[in-house]
Length: 120
Length: 108
Image 1: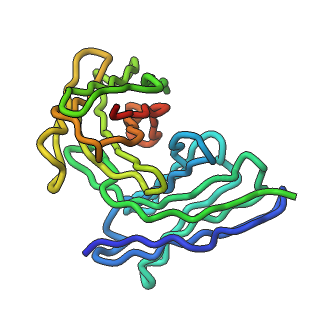
Image 2: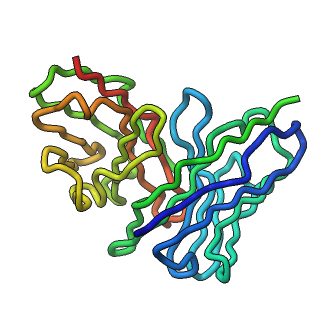
């Protein structure tokens, strides 16, 4: 059974750093594309970052240069290192598995999310 | 890149058909996926690659595409279908993911 579980959220001051983790089971994190998506309180979904199985990484404009996506294959865990955090980074952060069909990707399994609050 | 535009809300009575649209200039060349998000829950995939339904998703959910608009259709809407629905696509490289703003489906 495929499962994803995020952790590491919490309260952090503006300008601070935080690292989120996403432990997966039922598949190997190294064999799939993985992604982070966030949702600010009362708002819609916003894509944050994408990690290809070949380790290429991609980021949304609002987090580029501040966030880093990575993985630990031995732990089957995905990470999101967040630095220079801003108040508008406050959101529930979801990790999701990406499946590909004919070069087209879709997010077929999601974690339950972890809340990050950036406030002084 | 381009934007994906959805109506903020759609309301239907039980048993009726709900249609939720998503428009974007890049859609004819790319693909779309749809996610359902019920209150307090994580999103869930209901349609991928414009028209495909994942296993376990009821047959009343279907997707279609025409020009720059893709549509999620829910036939015979049930109370349990009340949720926010998001379309999702990508730019031509597939490396920049886009979400629509979401549509709140209310079952009257």
